[in-house]
Length: 186
Image (cartoon, rainbow, N blue to C red; front, side, top):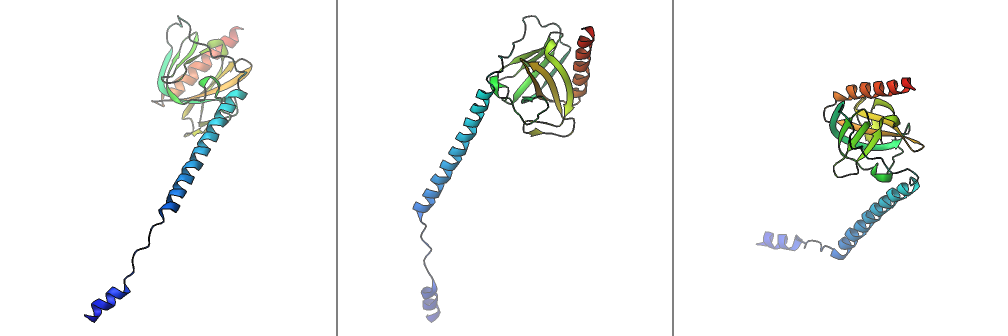
């Protein structure tokens, strides 16, 4: 009986949770996250305003001609040519999305479900290459098809990744041949 009394005397009640302090911390953390998100959103809008001099993107012609190549995959964004971290957000070029690319003699048709489509006329195409990264997306060496094109007075790099990476080489070869033939005809 004495052991039961000793055990009862040694037990302490559990600490009382300070709910006010916990709720205060949760609300403070939620406000901090909301502030960071708002600042990121404002930065994105500000970048778009700075790039407001970029002309509207061209749309595909009614009769673009027969498709030379087609590809389905991901659009990873556009940057100022040669500056793989300087993302262009004006006119929706910064929005990542699925993509369906079609190359014709008229140019490159970029169809993006859920985002703004655009067309790169053949005369605006400058170069195609394989690269490993663009605007926050880094892949293995040669895992990204980067197409350089002129829009207004700016050179733009747009990054694409095919669902079948083996297609990238054919795209680079075909695009560069098309560009070289056009420049040779001048």
